[in-house]
Image 1 (cartoon, rainbow, N blue to C red):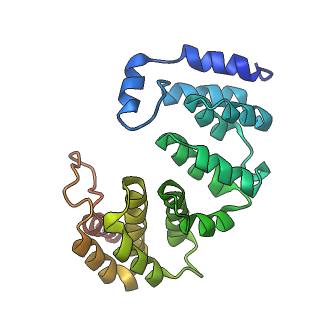
Image 2: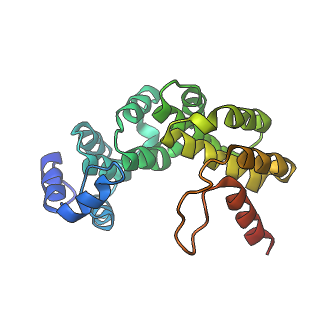
Length: 222
């Protein structure tokens, strides 16, 4: 039913809780046990309901916040509202979905990217780097790519995990998308050695930037 109240939706999410899935998610810092395919099915049934999304977010429940990112209208959020939401996004999956499904589609993406990139909070800064990585790949004009590499070279080695991952992704994206800077990106990655020994399942690409860059370039060039 399209007219479900926030309490009815919260009850539905609670009924979808699976203790085993909660245990698995907890290993990644996510405190919910709802199968994401089922959560997406709930979102599809509800459709876009922005006020409901605001209520779901306000509940503080992780599964409800994930659902909120799927049923909201990103362009209706104000800049300060999105900033407050990101700072309140404790669970990694909520953080990721908020950035990718909401902030990237909002009217304030670039303003928030610049502000977050310089934020002292590592979690907030990681969102700034994620938005920057998107621009590196799609709209690099106006970005100081050399300056980004300078920052990565100076700060990535000792950055907290979430921020380090985001900076590493940006480093790899610069090397993949910009041949003129590829040699430098590879050199920075090799010198820092970040994620060099990260366990990578068979068939997957290592997140170690030099390997990641080389593999993606190889695929593109055939």
